Image 1 (tube, rainbow, N blue to C red):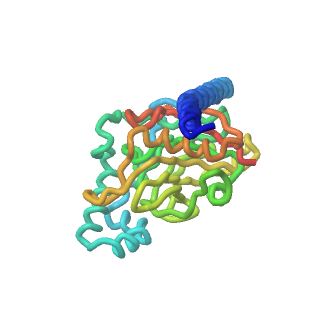
Image 2: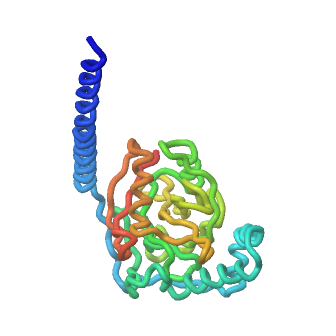
Image 3: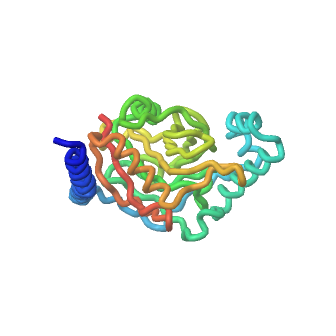
Length: 291
């Protein structure tokens, strides 16, 4: 075979290979869509419905003064002081404190002003206010609950995600978060998720993009016969212009799906948590059965 014929054959093979690329890509996308649809259908069939207790079951506030807020975040503030001058740190503390008290911030102007009441999860002795806040203040919130874990404490859950999954989480820092829960409506209490591990984890980097996971203590459930805990995860980025973390669109949905993708074999059900946040969270969360 002469060189000209070899060149023609090689060109034909190259064109054939290029034609196959879109076909392979389309096939992969088709399979991916089928898997997504199947997963969504399974979740709908296995959904656990939460129960709204009504507006009369309001959250009992325990307001923090600015000084108390600083004390509850002392370790985190020390970290910030190592990386920024004091005027910047003061502004960051002031911004977060105001956010926890008033509820409205630059990224959440579309949120509703009426914060929903306590809900009951799956008919069990698990009652919670489906939000977190950086102060024990139920008239405001800085995060929406989107994760519940049956069978483990928050430190056990933290250890699990640091050692399992396609994407490993690691210790993180963030503002102290507070959750409100109880075994009954007459036994509700605030619990804090301090600013470091095992209460806070991340997949990513602090001064970059990260999936931030905040774990809140639960309690022993008699109806479940196990411990449980809960929390919220969101996808955020660090801003050098306005120092601090800022939420991406659909932040809470993107982050909870990232956790599911990382641990696809972990048993889970979907539940309505009634905490829809426009542009950030669809109001549904996952219940993971850990043990």
